[in-house]
Image 1 (cartoon, rainbow, N blue to C red):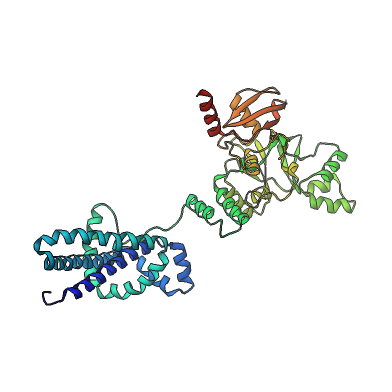
Image 2 (spheres, rainbow, N blue to C red):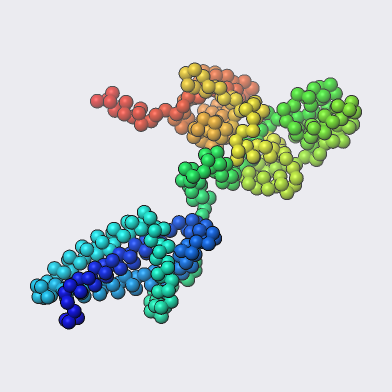
Length: 432
């Protein structure tokens, strides 16, 4: 190199630093690419995305190629900078050149290009893929040898580099993706997607109509009472039993009954002929599983039972779908949901209302890992049947019992959660 002019060496050094920046930036860009966007573009025929996707199938080879090129240009740049320094300062200039080159490479060939690549990975990655694809073929013997040694070392730690990395998402990760994508999709659609993801964590107990709120038809009642129940029913399908819901005979589709009713052919015998055998659901069944079971068995409703076979409540297909799309009707009394906002900002809520319904309606976070209804939550907290006027605080939510009857809380007044941080600051100010 003694015959090469200093100006030429400076030009070569600048080119090497730029190449180092390219290798460093493209490495970051390719490794931080959104894999799902990459797959989407590749399926649409984007050539750069297809080449990048192919390169990323073997990240060990890609990294071997990038690091081979990056280290080569860095070492060559170090040698040239040392030669230039020796021409000006002799052997004492070598240390000076090392310090200057370290700073230049750190700023212009590492931090800056990698930051840019992290912010705009597509800008680097797709361009780099056109360069790396033929370069990988040309330098394959060197890359193969480097990977051979590297992969053998990884095997000592039980890591198989050839196996493709798992790009699948867990439910929690997918939920986070939906939250982050709210700016690109309508809010209602995002809520529906989140509702689908939540089905696996919700059981039929969380949405069923409690046993005490089930309205059915007792075949042992007077015939006129039965006809009145049919005409006044809010549901299309109702359970039919004798004396007690535990002695359920089956389910009755009221639309079929009304056909006979309009033809004046409805009798006790014709009514019983329309009863379909009951369908029972184990209490811990997840909504995802139950939705599939409804589809498989061609049913739209069922009775939830505990381990002893006792009926706990009524579950319908509509109840499950409402977990995804929200309420189908504004008539909340159909499901026992009764929330009334008061002038002071509090809410008067029926004790039989599901806690999940309250949380969803008011965007609250009352605990749902225990009792399913507001009444159950209060009784579990107090461990006794409260009297009207009793006030408690559950998870920072002030609750006042306004009416109790039949060993249960019928209605309660709930206030929005207290501002804990504000309370702490206020107490601290008073103490000062």
